[in-house]
Amino acid sequence: MRRLTRWLSPTGFVLAGFCFLLTFVTVACDTPGGYGRARAGGQAEYTGLDLALGGTPTVDSEFLLPADQWREDRMPGQPLAFAALVLVLIGLVWAIWRRDARIRRAGAAAVAGVAALLLLANQARVESYLVDRVQEQVRVAAPNAQQTSDHVQTGNGFVACLVFLLAICVANTFGWWRVRRRLPKATGVATPSA
Image (tube, rainbow, N blue to C red; front, side, top):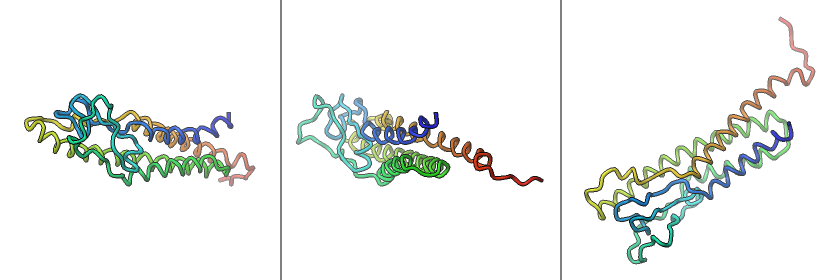
């Protein structure tokens, strides 16, 4: 059982890192006049890597506008997403490295917790940024359109990454607490009597 739990954190960090290849935010297909390179009916999907490093969204080729009609859809690199990705990689190395269980668990919990907070802050910032950008583009295509915030949606990759990071944080916090409670018994240190 101990060997199994020993590899839960590295596996969790690997899965969280893999989620950066999945969709973190989407500009929906019902955006009036389309968005960026996508015509109405298509959707633009930004992966976690697009957010962390900067990049253009994935658009189904069936819904691509002619090149002369493309509008701005490139996402500049987001420092918070990049920091979260770096922390996921640090967490993976930390969780694999053999060391005292208390230190390993405390470090993994802290890294995962901070990475989750950075992801949440980044997601709020990116979605707000995209709502503003969509609003500018919709104003031209459909001046009477309302509720542009409805066209920007959270992707499954972001949700899965956040779930993995929170699970790592909670599991390692609990594991750290259990190891800490057992420590005097395991080392044979006598506890002073009152």
